[in-house]
Length: 88
Image 1 (cartoon, rainbow, N blue to C red):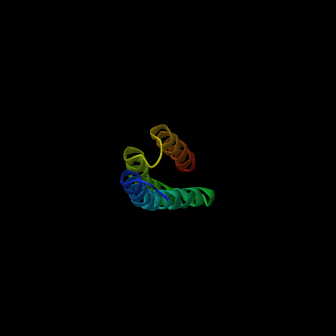
Image 2: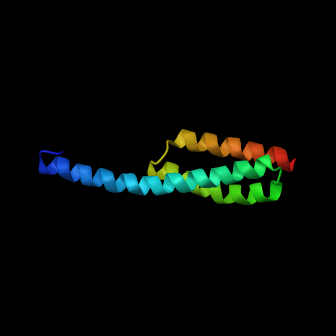
């Protein structure tokens, strides 16, 4: 438990930020799972369409600090490469 007012406020901010980040992270992960499952089914159209929805969300998560920027770039690159293999 926080012993100072400032520490208590920081704790309240942390809890609020944590919940916000949890929402973004969960949404991002579910979209990534959808892309990967479409890739496993060799469904190129569904994978491409889901990837187009996932890329802006991954970028937004990186911009907001939910995940590191390089991790976002790596995710997008790997997913795009996988979808490209199915399409090509």
